Length: 381
Picture 1 (cartoon, rainbow, N blue to C red):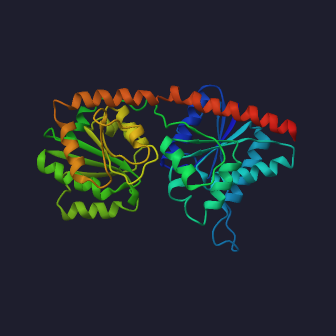
Picture 2: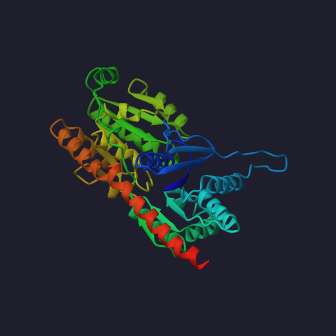
Picture 3: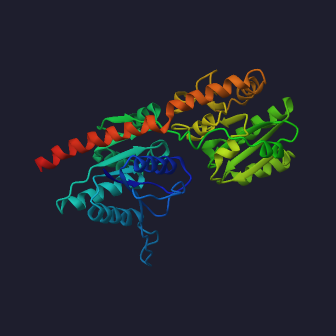
């Protein structure tokens, strides 16, 4: 099967999932064509089944903002025609699903019918999509897709609740590559971070308000009063400078390290004892899954898709958004040396439920269903 994958090429969850999906599909013999404005960060190798097509964004004095959606749609048309694609799989509703609809209509005029699968990842529905400036386009684009998937049951329900969706939605959870994300022996690294055997807490995010970075630091401050601990902050974003200032004011510089964006996140997770995700909203919690695959239990909120991943009292604990006291109490339970080994074991067992070889066939089944239905529609046309 020849599949065009359209995604954001950044460190965000939707781009990571799209890229990793394309790579595993290519390994299974599918021909995968990535279409985006830059090479995806996780596209770290190429083989005979992987291709990358750069969307050329031109600027003109007439345009205050470059019309990316038009450039993307034109690129889709070009790639579908000349690579003879069977299907387009777009990740994130805006502007990928709407651009795909435009491309689909252009191709129809040339006698080419290209089915479109849209995967919704979270903020395209729970944040951006609910903006009245975008809602009609999001609704229309989803309903015009030949197949629609979400990464959690929670996101599926949010989509039906906030939009007038008439399409059936398949839930396909995010996945993990256990060959990459696994606990590694990093004793020297661990001693460098925690020379006196301190417990190591890790947080990974894009440092936006929805991630509640203040809560991460507050939980750590209270934990630090109870047990020796270090905090590693992975990622970057608008809340980082505020968090760094907080650490300076509270004299946490020796115990909190900001590591920025990292490719080899698994190396840091390999030395962690606890992962904290106090987000206001998470459609799935891919960063938590990556931690669990590295045998790191999770303290998280009970919002969005997190309860579908993090099992209360088994792989970690769930707390209400903003309940710092409960998160600290639960963290101390996990970090007790008598409890930690079992939580680590449970975290890894849960991560295995989302191993990439179990999830990939679910996408392939959606592709087959969509292609079968589109052939019937094309026959009618």
